Image (cartoon, rainbow, N blue to C red; front, side, top):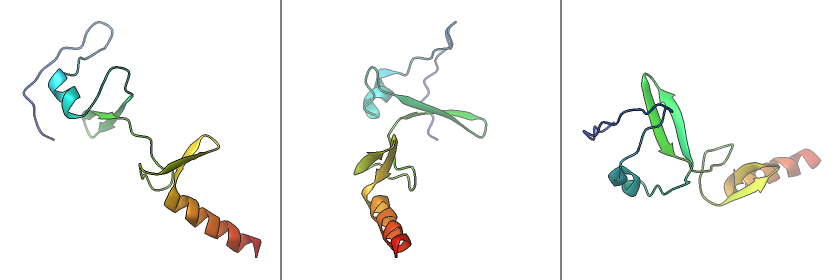
Length: 86
């Protein structure tokens, strides 16, 4: 990870302001969802990108039963379905 030299304090509600320079760099605007996870002993913030539940791809997604599946995985599932019908 790259250090930015920017330090922010957590407020009484547990909030931290992400500096405008970093928001601009990652194209984060008001109301964008941010994913929060832990990596070792670090807290990582990442702009949320919907992805395929099978392979993690973020492009050409189709929603099926409230889950996202990419075109490639849809094709693979279709092949499996066709084989099971034989």
